Image 1: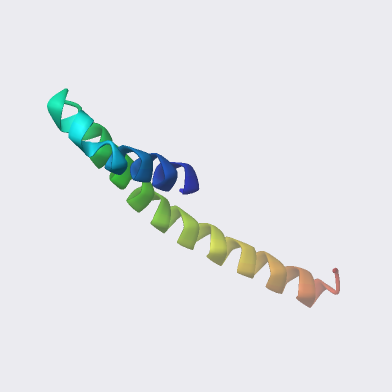
Image 2: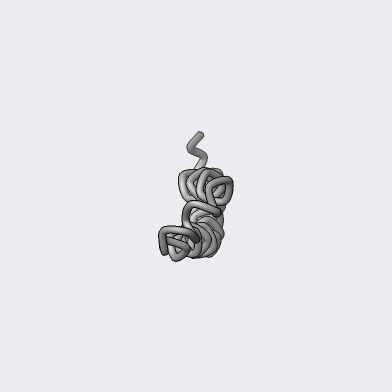
Length: 61
């Protein structure tokens, strides 16, 4: 997600060049990559929380 965000910021700075050369879709691709990462992040956070609870219940650290 961080890579998509960084690429999006870099491309946003260069948006005039993207528009002039017909590559505006690259900026939208970065936005889509970042937004698709949000549900993945939520799933992994939930997974990690469940794993921590299982380990705590089993007495593991």
